[in-house]
Image (tube, rainbow, N blue to C red; front, side, top):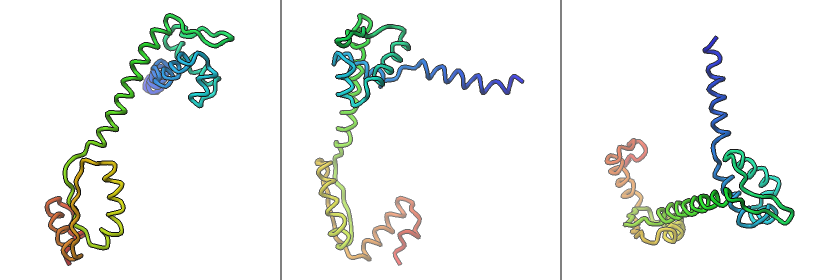
Length: 174
């Protein structure tokens, strides 16, 4: 009897944990409402309806156990607790933007030389047009293209397959 109830109890605990967990989007939306001074202005800048913003801020307030915004006919005023949350939210936003910058810059920081042996036709009509965009995205990379007859490209692929342990049937020199 106890075993049959265990999964339901565990699911209820997980669901309870999920309901009590802060959602970064709710914090981000609260910050937008606090900055703009009204739900309507925040709705215009985020593209989210003001009713959804009100619901998400109310959910954040319930999770934190504090009133963050004082609702008025002229807009909203940030409470003392709301100001403390806004300061933390601003730091979170700054760190999230730094993380995005790091990811974006990390993708662009590839350096070195890429050497490609390719047949003349494949190189001319397929590789070179794509290489232009690739070079723009990775300006620190140098590329060296060697146009070879098809039989030499196949031999090189066969040698590489033994180094990389690829199935030889994919790159057999015959």
